[in-house]
Image (cartoon, rainbow, N blue to C red; front, side):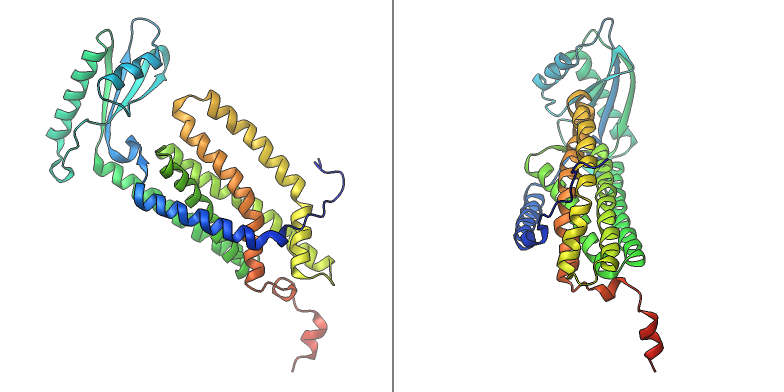
Length: 317
């Protein structure tokens, strides 16, 4: 289904210099925020304790969260777990521990201290299960998460270089680096908790943005065959306009679902949904104004994508 009944003729590439400046500024601000503020790491990365509680009646999640915050656990995460009477609480110890001195006995004492404090705050709750995540485990998860992003970017660059051309590979890779850095910059600037679910959303955004980029690149290669007299800028513009309907429909429908997750999915999915919302918007922008325009800046021509005609091969000595 076409969103636009007629082909649009928007000159996207005329704004590519302004878009490049805006992207560079946002990218730099994101890096500065990450260097100055860092990320508000979630329990998955910092380490902490998860306590599963059962109440004799339906649990009021908001009230439980407020009670824990009054007791000093401002970063407590409280979610419904299983039935309406069960909740899962994620807590970080009030006093930071020396990671080098941490051992099984230290972990046990932390658990006992937290469980005791939770029982004082929530006397009518029954403790069902206690799980402890050590800081070393959190650091390992952060390292593996960063490694997953790097491997995804390298794999993407190799794939596009083999399927299209190295200029497209560089453009798409820069776009894919641009997208997660801006997401992380927003999370850093607004001190939004970044956990494993948010990391999964960042990896999802990389794939989503790549899909948009490949659709445009396919149309660019096709247009180089059809539009023999068109300049590279005109070819990229035409390809972007031809895929605009598909881009808008895909992004709009995906955003509808993600917004539903953000508003109705509860606090556990807020970070995941927010990262996807930011990523879909930025990814759609970058597939138009970064991947394609950077390929043009690197000197993309018809000869880079089309095979050499047979006549020219025959004339070669």
